[in-house]
Length: 366
Ligand code: GLY
Image 1 (cartoon, protein in one colour):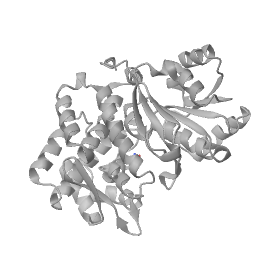
Image 2 (cartoon, helix red, strand yellow):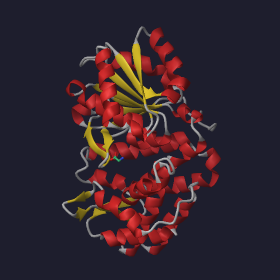
Image 3 (cartoon, helix red, strand yellow):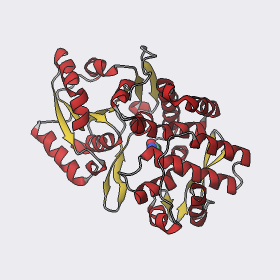
Image 4 (cartoon, helix red, strand yellow):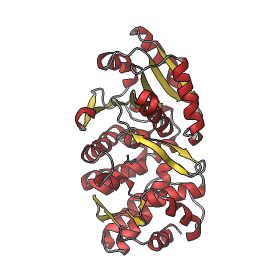
């Protein structure tokens, strides 16, 4: 997708403040060219391993390797499967075996070059290999730039569900190069808009107003500004609650129903950000029906979400989603932590929402 990603040349640095585990989120066009220099300054690693996928390696691998060579750094590339299937114990095992083949040790570092699937698997590998080695997140999709690359959540899937095995392992830095968006299909880019809107709903009304305005002219959407503001919000939340014992839960706004929709419709038929947008419609409906949000604000939420270019989804019945809702990780000791808005720009967690109410909210999608 070609767009206007060229408005900044200055490096933006957003801190994630976690004591000794603190790190920066760096945003700059063509940052990919500076990666070897950043790595040399920060850690001077013995061996660097890039974990990525074929399509990304085809687009950027050659350039990256040339830049490494110019800086007298060597690196190896591990390519993982090209779908959510890559987040499996089998693929994890394959990657670990390759790390041993490449004679990696505790001083090796991993670069996770890709979207959420790559970041989650590579982060999990980094957190467990020799009890934990350093890694950098280099997100290549809008969704991973504004969400999954930040905050250290890593994970793989099992047949019992998504991300049920994982860890918190913070990266050494998140390196965001908005130019990567140029090589993505526009639907893939637009899917990330769901998570960007979410940050406005849960934490910042001024940002929400801006996104609402930007969505009227989506072809000229100012991605760098939106990525920067989204990363600032996520960094602030993670800095206050790394392990999701409280505040961080608000990032799950729209996710309980969104995940269920994704699982029911099929991961290859709906993108994560699109499912989350539908999940936010339902969560907004629940917020209003339970007197957290007033009707005007709910109508505004609907108006904003409807500006997103979303695919049509099949009509769903309550029973279609129930099994996924019951399996949700946010379901603790039969108490359901559900995220509602008590006003636009402020989310809270509540255990007062019944499963039945959650399922009833599907009415807003029909
Ligand atoms: N993606 C939600 C979180 O990082 O907590």
